[in-house]
Image 1: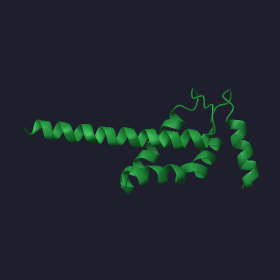
Image 2 (image 1 turned 30 degrees about the vertical axis):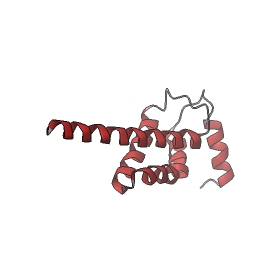
Image 3 (image 1 turned 180 degrees about the vertical axis):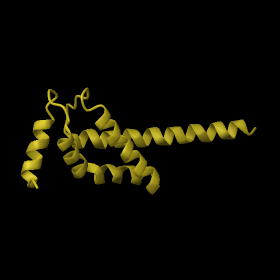
Image 4 (image 1 turned 180 degrees about the horizontal axis):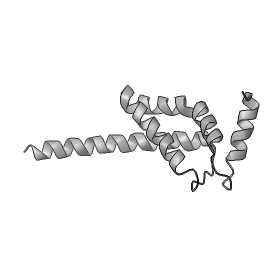
Amino acid sequence: MPQHAEIIEMLEIAESPSLTINETTFTEIYNNYWEKVFTICYKHTDDLEVAKELVQDIFKSLWERRHSLEINTSYERYLLRSAKLKVFEHIRNKQLRSRNVYGFGQ
């Protein structure tokens, strides 16, 4: 198992826009940052299942776009920003659904 310094070095190397995220790098990114991403999602939704789903969506998107994605910042900053945006999207969609249901009933 790589030591902390080795993991940091791997992530720094992988953050170059010219390199793609492979399975090993993705696993390291996930292991290092999922808790922080989850914390942001849970803090703003106050719903364990929704937070889990949002985290899953964020990492799924990262994996699916790994060959075309260019990250010009640290993985941590990218993921935390993604979490905030995903939470915002969730809240917005929830409000829109609520308005549509309310408007439909009248």
